[in-house]
Amino acid sequence: MSKLGKTIMFVTTVTSLALIVFPVAAQITQVSGGDCSALGIKCQGNEDTASLLDTIQTIVNAFLVLVGIVAAIYLVLGGLRYIRSEGEEGEAEKAKNTILSAVIGIIIIGLSALIVNFAIDIVSGNQGGGAGSAGEPSFITVPRR
Image (spheres, rainbow, N blue to C red):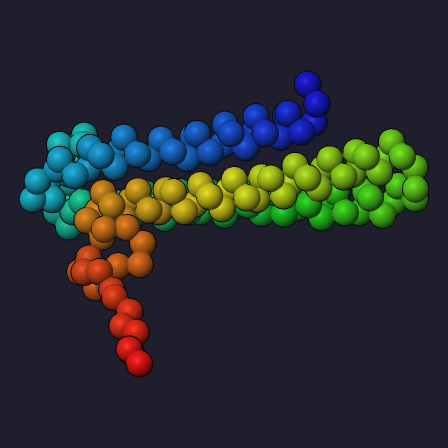
């Protein structure tokens, strides 16, 4: 399998693992009154579904940032490899493939972050991104001439 194929498979696997949050978040909305014991978690008395969703969102975002940093490192390594190839066709091609794979990975990671955060916002009742306070839609008024 080519390096591009391996990179795409890796990023797809990581993204799939990050998307596991959807069924978990769907179950969280079924918890009524902040009773976290329905999820099999020992309650301390101050937990509620909002804090649990915030925790999940924080974990997923931290994971996506970590994977994004790895992709950025690969981008830099590909650039250094390209510089060191000194015109040698085979090495330059490998470096270009590394750079291309890293850029594709960064794009997929960014889209994954958008999708996960959007889904968590919808599950938590915020109506998706761009909502105002308390889930109310924010409108932009344009003056007419």
